[in-house]
Figure (cartoon, rainbow, N blue to C red):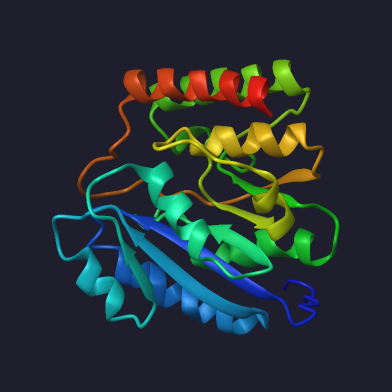
Length: 236
């Protein structure tokens, strides 16, 4: 049982990037709304559709949340940036729409920020028994990115690529984000670290998708992530 959070009348915006997630997005949003109602925060859910070709948009709209649709398929980074531009909250969360993140664990990420301990909380797949939750090539890539970020910034993070996060508006406003793809998580982390905001990780459950396939190309996207880490470090 989590301690009661002091919301101080604050609003939490949850940005949900989506691309062809018809089988899962409705359930994710429904559960997310139930969790948000129990937190006591003011709330808004912003689903950003990256030009899906299935019925993801219709499914999301039936849940009564704000849906923003990109005019063409641009990538996760563009989708998140579009959602951030619409977010009005004092706190901003991100969660994937494929069902791999559990909405019920959002309070675990919210609590340290609500207590004023940190500015950015990352849900880590690797602080539980997470070594078995992703493909081996993804685990190797994640370790490479973690070590590079630690070498550049001194910040030791176990899951730099996690898309389950909560941050303060001050963190978001401090960054000028450029990423269009999956590298956005690394860009955000490096820039937040360089601005000396307080960062922590909490363990989360991660459920590998059981339908379709991930849009991540380990080689192409991995190279882009490496570049984004270096570029964010140089430019921040």
